[in-house]
Image (tube, rainbow, N blue to C red; front, side):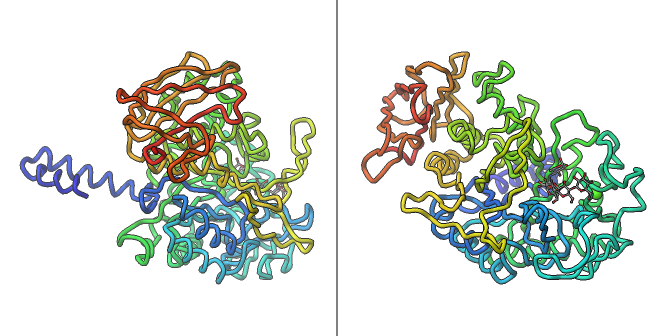
Length: 529
Ligand code: QV4
Ligand code: CA
């Protein structure tokens, strides 16, 4: 704000800077839906995949708020199909049968209560919205849905919205099967069925209006924005029309005139005619190259080395910083759906996962999202997980179990809770502490030992080589004793883990064995004794 006013004062002195000012203002407006609306200088989103609303509300109050998490991505809240074969897979929630706020995670009252309680502790809610399609064409007929609403997939009849035959793209799609057959053909990708899912005719004002009503209802409840599912399969022009119908955020919690944050799921690893770039003007876009590359680097596959990440970000061919939503893994590619392949580092490789997520959180590029998973019984046959469908921890009747918190703060009953792991939780705080500081004081050993700082607010050192690291580095930090927030953290006036002494010249000595439980060290302004 201060900056803007100064600029304006300078701007009115001559026409040239006035023009520049208008340009900046316009650019700023265009970027409105790129703004996450994080509160209190917070910087990270956690995807609480398949959590119940009641558990998310409790988690906001007891953990996310106190530990500086900026927001939660929630699973789709709209009414969805209930599948028996396989039994209650997680992916049934990506097959809507209407927009009633009634899902496996809870009903509308529970959703409203959760949004209110999270907002009240400064944690934003971002909703995963499925608007490209309804359920699969083979989804049958009846009331096998999360709220008991009747529907007929074969008749394309969804009376709870209502949508009928004319609201789908069956006639627009030009493939023989009605399915997307070739990702090289833009028209198919957007007008035909993605794995059998009934494709909505989003060019119709009626359909756009129904979708916008659904999103606006969520805005009124107080959500901060949306993760828009399957954007590759929707025309940017249709999305633009829908986003244009959205209300400003609820002023109980957000400044007047705030547009919902939008991040769009487009998987663009290169090689297809549809690119992420087509969606930048509409909001942020998921950068799938990020996790695929970072996984390859930490696994040291394809001759990659950590030292090559000196120019991580746009230097690696990723999208512009201001357009990117980044993550190490997501709910699809942690189980072989979506894209990224075997390189993706998940909680199954916990040591590498902690390193990769920490690298992401330490680095200034993009808006960051941390994955929080449930465990399932993996069964890999010829490289494919036969159990990739398994849903969240559930009771015998198929209802989702709540998340019990153990005495040591970890989660029970199959909930992994990566976001509660000390190393990841502390790195979320690190990112807040260094927010706005430049990437600085890079060091590497030309192999897999690297270090970098964030101005004078934080510094991180990785040893992903098969030998020890023992080196004195320029940290850029003020002199003093700091607690390493990876092996432990600051606890009143002492460190529970390693201690790092930074000299008056900003230099510090680091020793990291390649056999340490976690072969990396991080310090920041608030971890100083
Ligand atoms: C089956 C057959 C198809 C057949 C169809 C006929 O496999 O060949 O055409 O029946 O009816 C499930 C099943 C899938 C089944 C389909 C319809 O897995 O086998 O088709 O339902 O019954 C998730 C899962 C999908 C799941 C879908 C709907 O990943 O497996 O499909 O939910 O339940 C692309 C997209 C990208 C997408 C990614 C996975 O560009 O947008 O694939 N990612 C998002 C979500 C993802 C979700 C969807 C999109 C769809 O992140 O979780 O798919 O909403 O890359
Ligand atoms: Ca479509």
